[in-house]
Length: 141
Image (cartoon, rainbow, N blue to C red; front, side):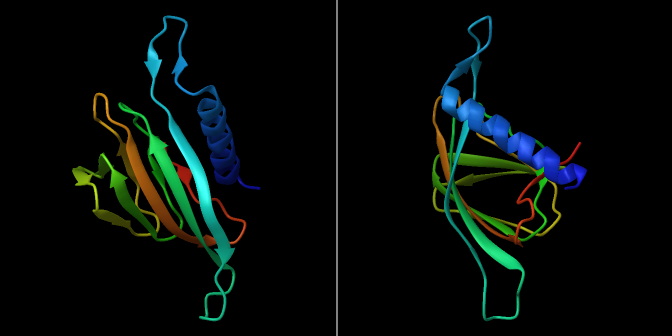
């Protein structure tokens, strides 16, 4: 497994730990925003000339104030906003999507996803095409 794969696996483990802890707090009882991830569907794509690829659909519930890691996806990724507002930073551009809107990312596009709302949760569905057994997300420094 390469460095990128390990980074993604460690990041997902940290998200899981944060999710289990719920609304985590620091030693000063400072609120730490969280993101909860739940894979709804993941299966290989067959019969259309894309052997070795799979589709993954993931539901995220993101707390107010959450700022994700700067990252990229090795395959095309589509984000549908179910509730709240998703702010996405790409290069020098920042875009805010509202409920019912879709954000399409090309493979390799570096982004940061955020819920800048002071009190409202963000709920999104993420649709990804990825290589079977490969990471769906790679953290970028």
